[in-house]
Image (cartoon, rainbow, N blue to C red; front, side, top):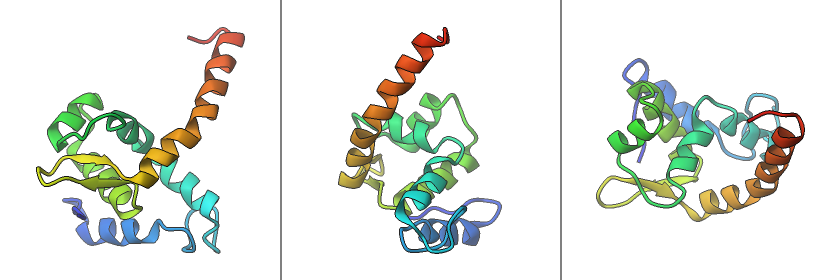
Length: 126
């Protein structure tokens, strides 16, 4: 399911289709999978959206509330991109949840999360 941005719906669809390994992205003309993933995950709110649906699917409004009321246009764009990249899918009720690739991504990020916790503790950050 692809949703369009109010400002430029066609750009959101094109962007979502573009964010795939093998296609150019910011930082790679050849579409190296890791660099495409970094491009996608480095976008504002992308990781937060994935984090919020890690346990249960959420509808648009519930997800927006959990993401500290981010603007609906930004949320719509991130959902379009994450669905287009195959990390999120919608259920029959229209709620967003992780695909198998989305679950495996969060599992792959666990070592980085542990590192960040240790780094925060050792540097005195909360």
